[in-house]
Length: 380
Image (tube, rainbow, N blue to C red):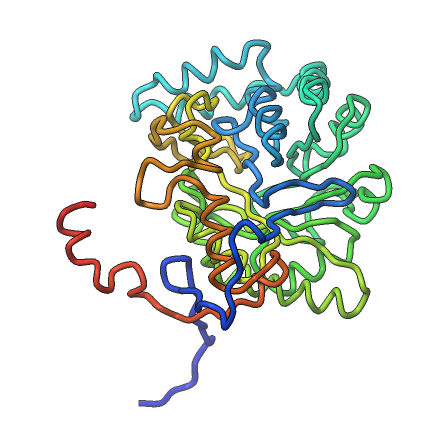
């Protein structure tokens, strides 16, 4: 029976539903260029460490930077609320699951201390690496001057959903175009997952966009709020906006797919969908010595009465170097992310990330199960 529809819905795809088609030529993996840049800052691989307390501390940011990557410090987390954040991190890890949500709400209600903001930024800069921090729009005006004075290199303005135009009771909210002019450093903004939102954000003068609403392992936005777009479709749609903006202005805005990553193939698919880099959390929270002590939790939503993401147990499975560069000790794709990316690029005939963005993709929901009966029944 045909009837008028109130709205049309389109199909959207996540990492497990698509596959990459090998190229007509192949490239030696060691000849692929996986470099990534934001403004004047160049990095050896396109994997950013997520701005979450279980993933990045000042010490971890320095370690990550010396490995050639970029780690983003959450400037509104326990690092800037407590003089001794390690004590707080251990308490979160030791709390029973039934009590941890209430504990997180309580701990993150403590005020942000401006002297600690400057101290944490200086600690990263003294380590000799690029310093990037994340702030929510509500605290950006107040805390950015402090971070800049301490030596900040890259600013990430991040919330569950970010748009170029925001309606509020504030007489004048955060104006991104003014912020970009005032700070004089690259500004990355997120998160978004649609063409129009991405295009409008690019027009403000930002250097990069974070793509993804609610896909993270510790994020509860999709279940609590019902919002989000699967990451392959979200990335592809925002990449279309980047290409439109590039054609109109000649200015390239980097696209960083943020969240939802579990294995190396997810990273490869995100870049093939149009990303320039990815931001990952829970896989890096599994590193030995990570701040979360084998746990990972979300904290993106500021509402004190809603869950700040859930705490998940991820364990401590390998060193940070092993997760990023191998050698892998497992066969499930959770280690040697950079090696997986280089190999995938080589098989797709992509010499660099820009070429990888044009890799042919197909809808293939059986890509991980076809012919894998023995692996599944034996748990290999």
